Amino acid sequence: MTEEYNYPIDVDWTTEEVIDVVQFFEAVEMAFDKGVASGVLKENYNRFKQVVPSKAEEKTLFREFKQNSGMEAYQAVKQLKDTEEDGQMIKA
Image 1 (spheres, rainbow, N blue to C red):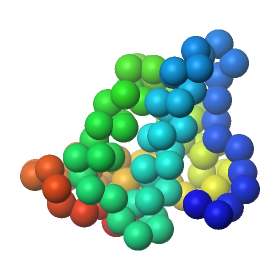
Image 2 (cartoon, one colour; image 1 turned 30 degrees about the vertical axis):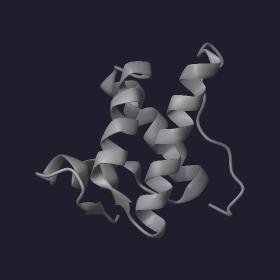
Image 3 (cartoon, helix red, strand yellow; image 1 turned 60 degrees about the vertical axis):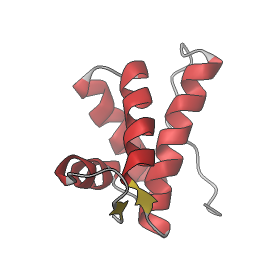
């Protein structure tokens, strides 16, 4: 989280939507850094999906995030979907 890069943001989003998207990407960073509880990532991903319901737009944002950070958000989300219980740690 000490890295300096831009999160993929849409100028048409409200301030609240921007916060939801940034919090999701911060949770992804935690998954790569030290791990994140599956419940935390799930909550943030669900809010992200309310802002970005389109799978195509999600893929575009994930690609931009990877280009900016080197982290693959898809890996964290895939682990989350493969996890059966809340509380398990997701480490991408």
